[in-house]
Image (cartoon, rainbow, N blue to C red; front, side):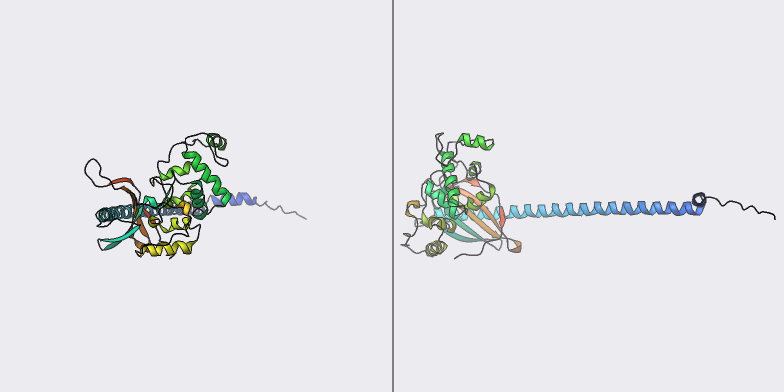
Length: 322
């Protein structure tokens, strides 16, 4: 019986290799690589375009904010100048916080004139008044408020001996901060941020209630905004609203005996004012321009001087509380 020899089949991987080397397969593979490359390029361009669009929108928004700020500053400054002129040229002495309205370019600008005597002076306020400020305006616990009140006093006094819960240079050194108490008066309200334990959040809650130009250890309630009246009322918002409503209505002989009497200081309105001009913007916002003004002639004959101009800020007004 004759045996038959069968030729061995080639190994599968060799067959696959031969198939890959065929011209048609090489072209298909090249087309696949080209397609993948095109897809990667399209994806990269998409990301690049999206980034450019985001950058452009950001630049447009920034430009719009700058335009809004510039317009608000110009309108606010114009209204502030008129408000100061009206205050200074009034037939009768001004005896309380005032509000006025001025129209520019068909826009109603509301101006509030706050005598510095209606604010809490960081350089002169007593420990008890500072304590009330930190409790009823900043929302601190009484023990924490006492600590910060004493630290404020230690910052402004001329000695290096700390109050029982205060802080002088050694405490700042132990806390690892790079500054020390100045032991001189506060120069601007923002100096309060250098007092140990005062952060930006706390400062934001009280910055509209304080000054360094009041010149008195108490507050004139007829010059005080609502937020300060709440402090003087030891947190009683209804009583503060009663006084504010009566004062703004022009009433005389307003009963203020319910206020903490040790925190009060009667007398004239002084000659330094915080003036806020508020203009309506889009989406219910208001642009607020602030200036601190001294009603005193300077060397060039101007009847008043700007002590400080504040950057325009944008805010949504809080609902009325009275």
